[in-house]
Length: 199
Ligand SMILES: CC(C)(COP(=O)(O)OP(=O)(O)OC[C@H]1O[C@@H](n2cnc3c(N)ncnc32)[C@H](O)[C@@H]1OP(=O)(O)O)[C@@H](O)C(=O)NCCC(=O)NCCS
Image 1 (cartoon, rainbow, N blue to C red):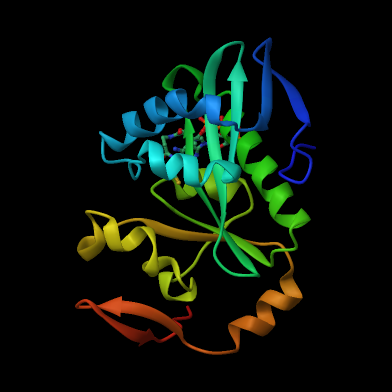
Image 2: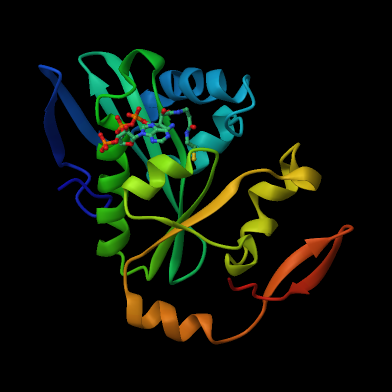
């Protein structure tokens, strides 16, 4: 299986009679990644990325290629020693509904397990897709640190309608952690403690 720990590895999957190559991204992928991600960002579905941001975070990314065409991408971004976010997940319109999204999530989850994370989370409008990949919906207050990064520069920060989903990778450790402290958040520009909301 592909991983940042083995950047030389490439995985192939046959999808709709096409050979889809999945591998870690490299700097040469940046122009195609910008097109794919910012195409969805223009529709308000995803957060836009700059060339600088992509370069800075390129080791987070995996890509799926159909020949020379970028069919999809996704990234695993670490937030703490125990949690990471699956983000910038995007499948080209021409390649949707062929299992490539699931392929990307599986590859990113595999990598998260290799790094010893307790859980991975995502903020999404497609919770149904993530449910099929083993994620469940949680209160956003359960997801520490996120507000410090992307949320602060998101145009929807004050009226966020994304759904927080989590896939637990190490259930015992995750459960222990849930019984611990409240998490930090941001309200009216100030840092506050958010209560952990539980259903
Ligand atoms: C959401 C997205 C990544 C799904 O990728 P995809 O390659 O079309 O999905 P897959 O073909 O791998 O689908 C896997 C499963 O999820 C289901 N699924 C796909 N899209 C779905 C959706 N929008 N809602 C609910 N279920 C969905 C499929 O039916 C399939 O189910 P099955 O296993 O029972 O057959 C893709 O539509 C996309 O890039 N959307 C725009 C960007 C975006 O929303 N990204 C997510 C940001 S967090």
